[in-house]
Image (cartoon, rainbow, N blue to C red; front, side, top):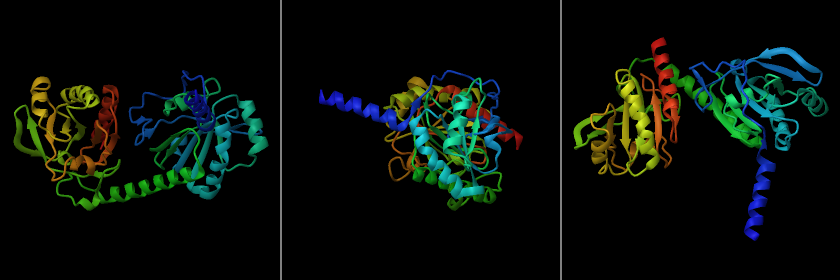
Length: 364
């Protein structure tokens, strides 16, 4: 009985402190979902839309796209009836005052406009927060498109280019908000520095000092041992130096999710074999990999490999693997990391990212 009471209390506290539910399931017609260059995951160029500013005096005439403000932008989805939402608004207000012209704080209300106007007028008049609303007929449309899954508050931090740096489900503290803004700013500065350094058409023989393991970095390289159904072939491959869009897939025969996702990775490799490279790196001991390849992927378009490092999983660790597989990185033709998945991913999501990478390469 005590355990049941504790469980119920924990659930109640989580609901009260972290998030408020919505009825979801709605779609906003004024948002372009066919923009293949955009998405809602960390590292994606965020989907944009046209938001309308609101105040205690009524709907403002100004509309704006939060992804095109040219500065770090914090998007906070909230509602006047949601206690966690209301409780964290002072944090956003303080951050807006602290960063002034450097950061835009946009609070998107997800429900009835008139109540929001009344609330803003009574509690946040002359606020530095930019209060806004989505389509009146579909107030959750943009929230859902940016990855909202049924609870508010929901916060998305964008860099100055509109790329998603961080997301938060539930209420956050002022310190966490500042940490996210500072991290976003540091990443942008690092990315700008690396973009200046990387003026080459190939990554061959470039020094490790300009390489890294985060989105926007020139990817660390390594000479991996190529394997097939017979074991090591005697060849090596460096995934960061292949001169084309490359998927690096860390997996293991002993891990069911990696085996399942491998079928999607294989399909991507088969369908795009002349345009991309797919390198599947087996983690831990590779002794079970040859027989698995023979039984399931003979003559595959995937290049299977194992780490040649002195330490187990050395390349996986170097690329910021944190103990979970599958772990997937997508590199552009210059070896720059454009996407990371620290988990299983669907064929559709892989295809979307690969096609975006190829389109970007074709446009350069």
